[in-house]
Image (cartoon, rainbow, N blue to C red):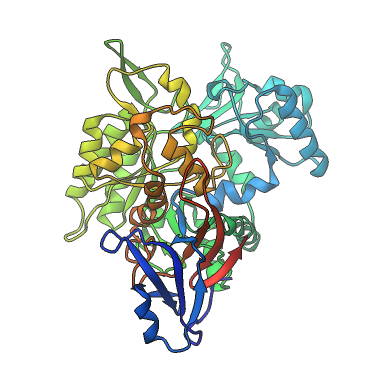
Length: 528
């Protein structure tokens, strides 16, 4: 439940432990005092004299930090529907995939959509499937297997017929209906070609949608997460969030990043007449609009890599995001851009520079890029000069070993350390439920980032290693800045929201701590 009025509750002091504030002006303290859902004092034990009858929480040597912020969590779209689908994450054989689908079908009989999420195709180290493979097993009901990235799916013939997709169907704008040599769709739908399916399988009335969001959000509290940025909040999702807020049912604070009517859609025009970035309160606030400059498939990620003296180009970035960015900026919105490829990042930075020229007087554009898996030194410098930020996902390091075996003449994979050292604000996130693992645990992902490995002891890119404590800062203060929330949360600083995490154990990636307690808005919401 969203906490109500705390003003009648006594102040609480946390002491006798390590207080890691993430505030560069006051990095450590002996005592932290909260009252009324806010931090009211950070300093030494004398603070407690100002609060007669103050309740004392003995940290017993444990560490208290700001609560974690997941800066890229698809809570209102894929994540809240994910529990109702067959879980295919990390399944890489036909046998395991179809076993999981069969089990799911038994629990969900009928002739409606059969949905599996987390399919890995060969591009991701999994297995290629087409409509023919699915038809063999499921000829009588529509089936879709969504790739782990969300950007590609395979459907069966029944689904294609249901959607009205045939040989004469044109590719949608910013989408691909893949076809065999005879021109017949083979069941692979890429980017916007998936939109009609997504519209159906994620359909729910506002109350049902709100219930699904609430249930999934509650799972974040044991991980120490009390705030997320939702990249891609459709009008329907925004209505569900507003219902939860009105009924005081938001388990975590939400930064809504407005989007088009369907995911992967850059047509955000209608939403631009609504509340602008920053509108709202600490429980529910409008963030930057979400735009896609590229996708996440070989066809839709734009790379320009120099290897062995030659430039190798692949994929294409979208041609519809710059105008949308400029329009949003003119109306007072911040914007974040999905940018996987390095060629895409050049185009995205160009777009931000163009948008800044048309921004309203006094408006400070804050460039924000999502993912950025490959960057050059000049791009990092350019982003730093623009006072930009990035939201990255340590889970993608599981693909790093293959990238390391293909060394580049120029550019750097997963340049987390270089970004941070250059002054670019780095925030971290899960991309939940996408990717190669359940990446919602900030501690687990901080271990990955601080060792630049997948937990197998092999450091992939040692030059990008950052200390474990720095990763905790990235998951707290970094996330707050990326969301324009640095005056609201992300640090243990007087006046900010009293969202706290108590960690038990040393801050050592070799033997990482665990979340012992999570406090939200000054109230204990989880205890291990």
